Length: 425
Image (tube, rainbow, N blue to C red; front, side):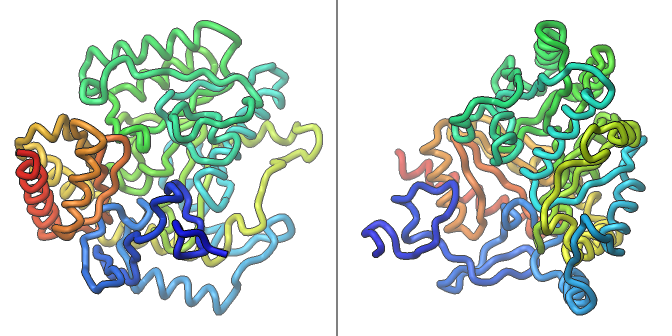
């Protein structure tokens, strides 16, 4: 029996039950646009679920999936291997820097986080050291499975269960709009240094190159390079969460490339398969993997999933890498992202407290959560889908965005800002 608040048996995540009825229903998507059930088309300003990096309905990705479906859907990764997974792992080793050569294929970013935690903590046991403390941002988001939720201090991901290992959270020393200064960089590094210097030796530090669900916060230039040196000084592994930022989203192939560093472990998902099929990856350095020959039970990784490295998903991911390179999507992300950021910064309104971004992830911080909700709704009426959370509107369109699309987004947001401001006079 359905309640009065529901018109469907589908229980949607992250949405209050009382708000599930009457939501927009998307029924079709092509290129950079989506259509609702009433027939209205919108620019997709959120890339599906922040993962449609190559746009919707890309013929080459559909062809890759169809071809692999006809040849081999999947096979038990504990028993055998297959060409799409082997090729993808090899290609990731080629595009990732340093000794990041060893890849585990999974289904989601949360699973990649779980694998990263298991590997990082087991690594220290493998080499005979007792380290199990992990340091992260308080405003981090690393997924929603048990271990992943423990890593976040955000209110909507706080876990009700005790952490299975010590976790230290570092709070931002300044407001998001002030985090791009040299003074904030010094203060932030000082906080991480304090955590590394005090308490039990840290096993790992895990951070995002850009704090996504934590408010689309752009970290200070050079922060990751300084954090890399801190981790080296204290012997801690550095884990970079590239689930959102990876595969061109920030105007570089990976977000950590802006600071020219190499992490010890890197998690990836979302853009890796363009949103066409569930896929994630965790890549670690060869020295980390080699210690697992001494793992006391399996002499290898005791973690995996039935459909991890699914053959069809891996085949699509290989084609995504081709499309990114041939269509120069990383470069386009940098170009259109800069144009979008510059255009938004020219909009003057008391509703907008800050505009920030990196590549094709741009955020508008409003003066209140209510303003963000009103502005997002008005922007949708003007023909652009965005996403708002706790007063911040996030704009992360496909990397295939054109200059005309960028101009249309700016026009829609300008119209929305004027409309919301006028309604409050």
